[in-house]
Length: 337
Image (cartoon, rainbow, N blue to C red; front, top):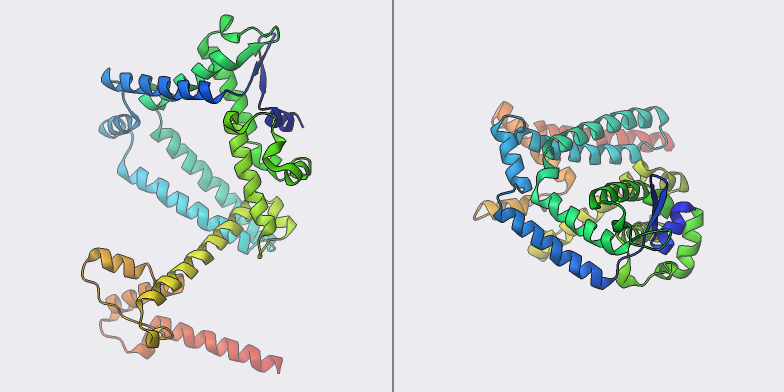
């Protein structure tokens, strides 16, 4: 409830030594000046030769601390993490498989975070960090107060206020998802929506905006035609997997619609259609029209051709697999009779 009241009021409270500090929501006017001031600091830093993040990464590559292969590894891990969440959802009621996936997912997530920490080793020495620091510090000078209602910047340095505020803000941020699905929050959110906040929309804080986003996310899930069970909703990994599965379904439907638009009416129910491409871009666009099953079949075909050269259709791996699946299905149907 402490977090909920903080979100409703927009006020963040913390202590420096024995002094209570409370940070009020910034006005639209103060935000405008903070935007201008922080951008000015960024531009001046660039002129003075301070690194931006790209410069920092190039330096890390030059000294052999970072490489393109590690950059590629981050993308690979992101894809693996997404696939593992999908597998976790699909095996949600298989406890042993689910636990195995969860352990590996935790490991992959740590590996990804380690690589990101390595990539952003010098982030606190970049123009981007200076811009973020300048923006937050400017607002804290206007919105951070002591209990006696005097500005906190009169007693504490910008760095001290920034560090303490960022720590508390990050702590609240890490709990937003948990709060958004809690009964205490959802009961009021469903009743009044954005009017739950005591400040005006123009002065909504980053935390409040993030909370609105999470609340809308759960609204969409509860209203979904394919709404998952409550057990899955309570499990963040499973719910992420459900969301991924829904996104993939939409993508498949969009691919099908896109394919139907470019095909003649009499070819739309054909099993396989070959469309000539005039260049690499068209080839890529055409390939994207394939479903996941279609892409797997193409990869299987390429492997067969690389291994055997010319192959009869009946000897293709994909054809054999289809016949095997048909035989299994026929066997199941016969047993039911």
